[in-house]
Length: 445
Ligand code: PLP
Image 1 (cartoon, helix red, strand yellow):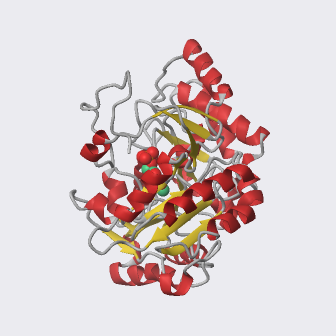
Image 2: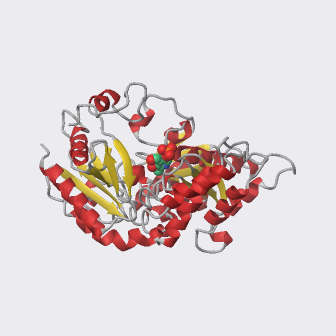
Image 3: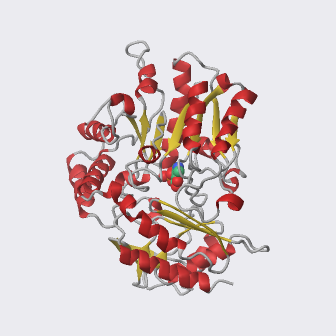
């Protein structure tokens, strides 16, 4: 382990690191100091293959000059302008581009865009729009929100309330009037599935039960990640998302997809909604929108939902919600340059072309010590380990550290190792990734 501080290393005391065991990290820090293409460089000057696109966000790979230059140009032209009762052209241009990313005509698209600064803000914005929609549409009793066990929707109070990762909720109060569908993992029936598991579509019927239990007229929206990411990559069972859509339609419940991870090419289509052929009413995005270069999120809203807000009295504010940095010019410039790269390099479909190779490579780890499940979809994967009875999560942590020390960045969630490389990944990188991971798994006690 890296225990000696590097020359010129900054003091580590003041920064309270998020979602980190601070004392453990600071006793043996892991530092990344630069990045280019598929690789980070550590502070001891080792290449570290990026197996996680940063944090599921650097989809076009690192060090993209085009983005840096666009941001620099924008900052020198217009560094900041408010988007409340004022406008600047780049935010309108970006919204038009995003609206046009989805296939089909206006009625098939979610083409009204609200900008935020993160995935958490996109989720809370989506939830608030859903509640406010029912109010303007004449059904103010619909305030209840339904999430799903093991869901991750960021760290705002809305997001942790509908989220279902227990440690993220335990220490905090959560919103009233929230319920959760069961999660969809079923190791007994679906272990080592490739792509969507076969069993579990009927779990969507939980929503039907909730409509009966609470009264459908109390439910504003259900929110799910099309593929649950942070809990350890759980692709939806075949037919599950379709069934949720049908139940939502039956009961007038809005369907929100949290596409913060799955948006911008992760599965092999622009969005998961295109991949699965199920259209939500609202879609929350962030991360890949700017290739991770600057913080930004976008909430995509369907016409019927948006139009309901446009019926009010002229001169009245439609939605009492927004941020100082909504549509920040520099973030808009980063997003626009990122979209250019995605389009020029056809990155939205690259995961589809590579997914067979990816799947075979990752599933070759089956049979190694303690591996109890492997899940793959698009350019996402999870390797789940049997937890040590006395010390759950430590096995996963040891693999994560071993991989880093041998030149691979992975993502750790409990005893599951998650992978989501930049979409520019090539076969040689996949080979390298699997080799390092396999060696680490073989060393595991
Ligand atoms: N929603 C999902 C599905 C996520 O995976 C994340 C972050 O990983 C978020 C929301 C929160 O995004 P952020 O960390 O940008 O607030």
